Structure formats: C-alpha cells, structure tokens
Image (cartoon, rainbow, N blue to C red):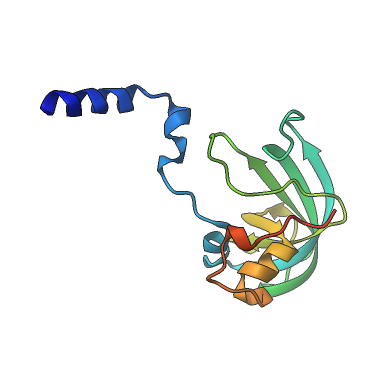
Length: 148
C-alpha cells in the first residue's frame, strides 16, 4: 500500500508541467470582474497586434479608446491590454477585433494612457458584472462569443 502511494507520488511529481497546469483553479471572468477596481469603463478596440499567428487569441496586445466611465475616476486617453497565455490551462479571453466595445477594468487611476488590468467584451460584462446589469452568479457557460 505504501509502495503504491510512493509510486503514484513519484509519477505525479515527474509529470510535465503542462499536465499539471490545470490543477490549480483559474478564476473565472465573473470572479475577476467582481474584484475591486479603481475604475471600470467602456472602451472601443482601436488596434490589435497578434504576436502568435498560429494561436492568435493566446498572445496579443489590444489598444482601447475610452468611451465612458461606469464606476470610479473619469478616464481619457488610450489604454493597452497585454495578453499572453503561458499554460495549457488558459484564461478565457477572445481575440479583440477593431471596432468592438469592451469593458475595461483598472486597478489604478490612469488619467491618461496606460495598461489595462482586465478587459472583456462588453457582452460578457453585461452577462456577468452587476455594474453592467449582469448576474454575479453567472459563469462562463452563460457567455456567447462576441458578435463578429
């Protein structure tokens, strides 16, 4: 019995990192939206730069222009989202498309150009974030892909 347990332990420790990547739960979009932010705003995607053409939604930067502030400090200027997934258990995040409207979340007062902490398509925020009329108990299964 002890020998079997030791073999199982040794095999699990020897497993490649990618095989263990999903062992730690990843926060859902709803959980990340529910966090405290200094500013939550609606913004339009004005530029997207894909850095991994073979899997475009895995590594990209997106630039947003703020349309309106929903909560927190009023913001102006352009914001940038830098997204890179390094595990086999990635965050749920579609590739932005120029012209789409997204919800952006800031942990700091940008008051101008800066980095976005979190961002999702506005249609997702409208489903998951009470600030946009969403349900806090909704989950990723309630999401639809952004309209293309």
